[in-house]
Image (cartoon, rainbow, N blue to C red; front, top):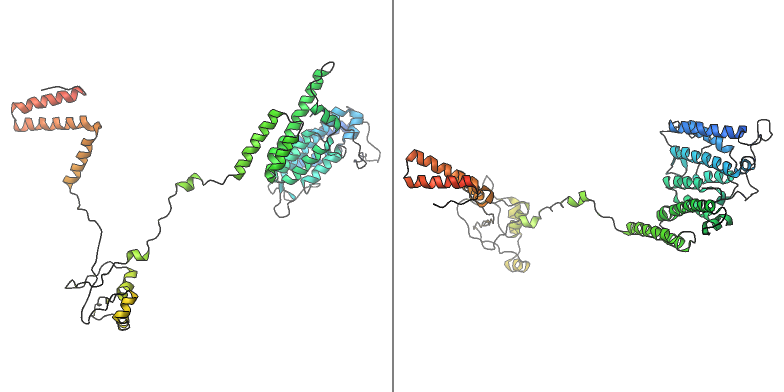
Length: 440
């Protein structure tokens, strides 16, 4: 972002003190060739190289040393506002990138901690939250949130979103938007200026507005939707005087899609939809055979049908004695149940079948509704195959060729009359001609 988007003209009594040398006196003038600027550039180069090589601890130590000596007010007085701002932005962006490669959010207390694959213990100066990092950034930029460059603000907000800390990101963006200087707001809201310096002013305004829209995009489409605060996002877009109508319409459409996606119910996955529901287990009533009230004896040996577990109780309740065992004696439990049956009137009221007379052996009549198909022989299977082949149009020529071959064999073997030979020749010529028809 250009230097005109934010201004360094907001002194604060709590600004950070100037770094002192080893002897306690302030450092020399921070000009382009001063030792401080050369040292900051060297630290930036070494920290960048260590980050690229995956040496996170070395990069963290060098970047911390660089940002400790980074103060926008002091560098502006000796080095120039634009050059000082660019140097501070580069140092803080590198510091945030190094922190993003090392930190993760602890689920126990919500604090920052070093990833276990990076280091076993947190290094010196490791922050406990992103808010501490933001406080250090504001101290470097004059202790004023609106004075922080958007090039530093955006990586800080992205770090919060990466660590799932949307509340801190919301506080940072709202503090930055609320404390923008009047000069910055005038630059964002002004139109095209003509005359001397109009082109440079227009380019400056275009770059400033692009940075502002980037912050608005993060605020309305990433931070507030994570918090579920869609009404605040709509209000911000409708009340903003900097966002143009095309950008507002685009942001509104994307916000609508995010809101509909959040409110829509979750659809089942394709894998789960393809699964067929398991068939329920058959109930016990379906396995019990129906026993008539007065069933005639079948004669001979009693028939033992495929009655399952529920059939025995039903037979006992209906007054049917179980079949005798191998010794010819009835089961004692069934005899006891038969003696304890109520009278015929009581059984009729209860909906039970009447008791059989003494000495009569009533056996259940088995009713099977299974359809037994006659097994097919080789001839039946061959006939089905031939019928299916004949029903298909694609096997017409195949059928004609088979018929011609059979007739030829019969003619050669049994010496059929000349008529069959003529018919065979006509069929053979028809098969070779394809779709054409030859009349006899």
